Length: 463
Image (cartoon, rainbow, N blue to C red; front, side, top):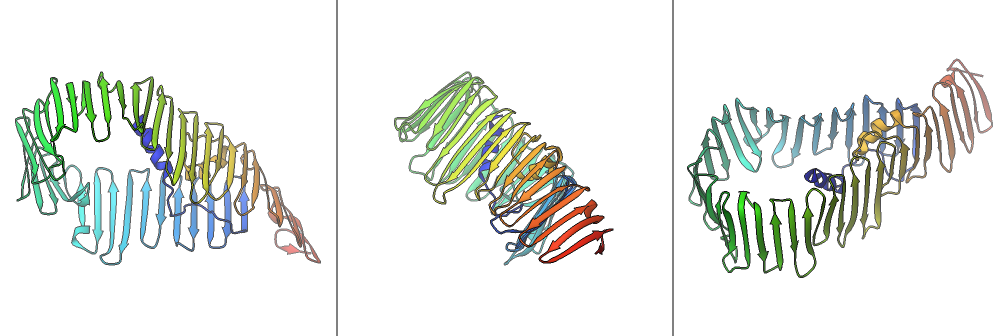
């Protein structure tokens, strides 16, 4: 759960520079809606259309960006002059890029079964049907990966290093002048890079040892005896850790470690259930009694949980201050302040009742009934109007809007005009020099422009 929380924290903290929805302070030149079903808004250089919940489209002229969705998150596509990306249920998707020096390339993925790439160069052309046969280039930190009837045969390439495996992960062989890797599990394995690291094992997972950071000022070494003890120490003794009854890696029944350079000391017991750590500078503190309570602070980041249902994450730097609260699944609070720019984003969600959001531009939106428990601007824009009882927005360009009962009544106004409508029945618009009143979208209506007055009949006839 806490890895999931960390993902949400990082995801919500990263605001894409490529827009997906209408924004800014420019005035609205056209706004049309029919209940929650149809909504269209145009501003100078931007347009957005919703046919809920089936289709949405946004276009920005300045960046030449297009964002489209169909029954989001079933399908979406985002396009810019340099790249495009689309996804079907976040499982089947594709990417394409235009490179000034290498031309274009495209990737098509049905994770993890099918991956297909094409482009103007050889390294961008590949094909994979997992686990039958495939070749994949420039993925998963490797230059090339090939397989046949995986895990029967696999081959990896990275720069000039080439490794082959039969019945992965049991066997592997690869060797260059700098790097070697041999594996015949569970009997032995060896992995080394001259001047960087050296790892070995026999009768895995029972016995392993090695050295790391050979290119640093203070290399370290480790030894591991499964279910007995594990030890890791640096060359000059500045770092040291000891584990009793290790299971895998640093996870042990009991463990102790320190780092003299940062004055950090750590204790754990019962694997990860009890954790305690600190340093003299007070910028590192950790105390965990899982799953009841935990608090971890490192430098300018802090994480606290109380039972699996409450969590708090906080960042405090010179540039960004952010705070997140979660009470699963009912409450989510996020506040992000960019200090130099003096811009703040504030978001609340009391699921499934209220969503409240004031973004960096100053646009405020809130609505009663928001059934998606996680923050997602696109999901909320597509789906919330379908079941919202009440909506209110005060946008950065001065437009204000109130909607009631799934937009059966909508009132929109700004300094220059006011609009209100009841879908299919009544539509009223009043500006400084014009007034319009229509019934049934023009079956019967009245319009005044400056000194002229009209009576409208049967949609097209004006008297």
